[in-house]
Image 1 (cartoon, rainbow, N blue to C red):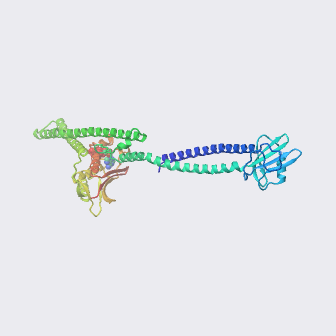
Image 2 (image 1 turned 90 degrees about the vertical axis):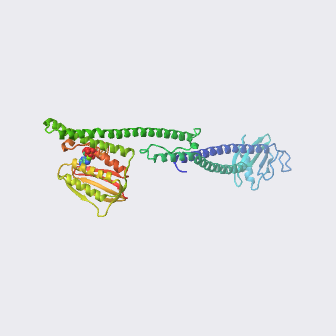
Length: 463
Ligand SMILES: Nc1ncnc2c1ncn2[C@@H]1O[C@H](COP(=O)(O)OP(=O)(O)OP(=O)(O)O)[C@@H](O)[C@H]1O
Ligand SMILES: [Mg+2]
């Protein structure tokens, strides 16, 4: 019984029942009071019937209340004197005289008699005297108290029953709602961004019955999930189509490119002296077609990693791999200072050695192409909570802030003028390949960059 809705429902229902029973009790008690008092007044009227002249006995002529009823009756005959016809214990003569002095009224009144408590009293004048009759008011209050106690107990009972009943009903009727929430939570935990977009979770048929309010929500949730599923499937289909297209196109481009490069080479070899213009053009054709081959190679690799990441995962020593890659970089570039920071133990991770080598080479190549000569570059490797962490840090200008968020996306690169200034050819696919390869191996990539300190990190699960 958690959640504010059920608490509110229970509280409000119980409060409503309490209010209704209390109002009912008040009205019933008022009515009961009226009835009891009218009955008492009726008995008073009856007891105040005409007195008989015969003063020999104690019996008034009117219908008398039975003995022990607490009736007081005093008859006064003008010029003769008064006589107490009926009285309870404790009635005194002075009290009787006092009562005879009271102002006569048509209606009964309430009086407190010393030593006797509250009485309902009626004074009747007649031609030769007056009669005073009184009956104990407890005839009204006692039954009223009993009734009030009974009603109070009933009210408490009704509140308790309604509390327990509503609790039960609310719990039962909200249970399907909890099941809907559980289903929604299950869906939100699904990795929908990947895969074919199958949503294998639905609200059970019993909770999707449109004849109940909760069922309507359940049905709407199921329809929404159907819709999401078909949208995801559609997206997956079109993505697959695009990927296949890119893969096919890259593949088909390789042959004509190889031909262009082959013919260019052939032309250079076969003719002894080309005019300088033609020789320059030929050099450009060779350079650009080489660049395009590399680009096509990258695109093909990315398309493959997207659709069917066929990686050859095996436990590999990363220490050796980093060491070799830095040696190669040092040999290729003598203008920067290359250093290593390797652990003494070996670090074995489950990776595709060929692709992982490419990752490190790409990071080192970036440190070479996007920094000025004289930059210090450090490649490091360490173990950290179950991860192998490879980091390439340089003290160059850093990745421009405007592309830092998207630097691992395809074709993200600093603006062309800066690249040309650095004298490099840049496609913006290098880090996308890094991210795709590392992701396919179950790892993560990261970047921290500010001028003078630019660090790319790759985390891979240890074998
Ligand atoms: N070490 C670095 N220092 C400064 N900027 C960097 C560094 N590494 C990457 N960058 C920036 O990130 C961009 C993207 O890098 P990425 O490797 O993806 O592409 P690229 O190097 O431009 O082209 P290529 O596909 O040939 O690698 C670069 O263009 C560069 O602006
Ligand atoms: Mg690069």
